[in-house]
Image (cartoon, rainbow, N blue to C red; front, side, top):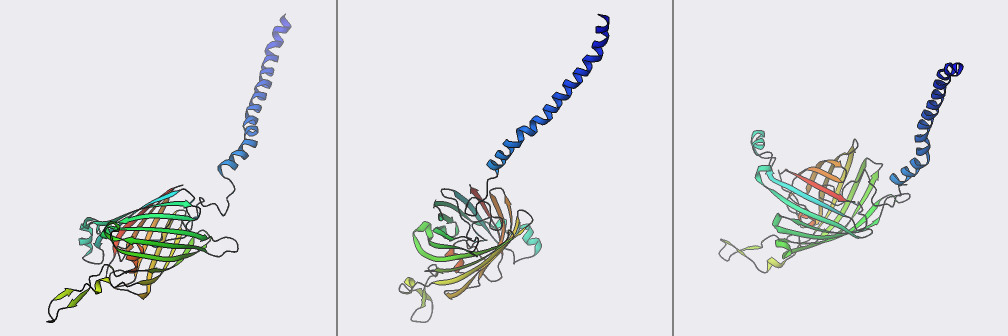
Length: 314
């Protein structure tokens, strides 16, 4: 018995050490074995193969449905939607001193024109949108058909646009519009846009006036009040991605034919994308956010602070 009692302390610890080493080896190997096949399956589930025709895939160079006000060719997945809020503050940044601008919080204290848009993909490649602006209580109904998408041998994306808007909650001064937007993306950093648009009845908001027979006061002319004037403009825009999710965008709507008062409307914005949200701080020479409003141009010596806030639901 004595030899056994002497050998046991020597054998038992060695057996324990072997068992412990085996247990630790299995413990270390188990995660590797468990991760080898499931990890590949999990990766395939979390990050599937990206197809160029997948409308839900983020396109870093084209993160939003507008540049500043002009449309883009961004597609919306079928039965998915997007919500957008627009603000254009009434304070003109080109008037007054810096101190006066600061006291009014750079126009924010002087009120704002606010718009809400809901966009829904009724079918693949087909979007329908409802937009209401507090500017003259304008409601715009518009649709977009994303006919072509840049890929492979196709160098550009192309979308067709139709729209109709009316003031006083879509009760008067109707202005239908039609056009196309063509885009070209350069890698994942730059996107450029060309948007020719024709807008009917762009002078609907003007009151027609005539001299009276004595050459004095002006009087309204009911005959001229029904004259419609149209505008054709070409929108030019672009967006550049800085870093991973910060952008700078700019646009101008150049009137080439028809009714074209004041100056061409333009805008620039600094943007930040956070998940499904897109926030843009805008600077424009117009309060315009609809196609007919853009066709009427912007004011001379005017610059207004504003913002767009978009939220994708896909």
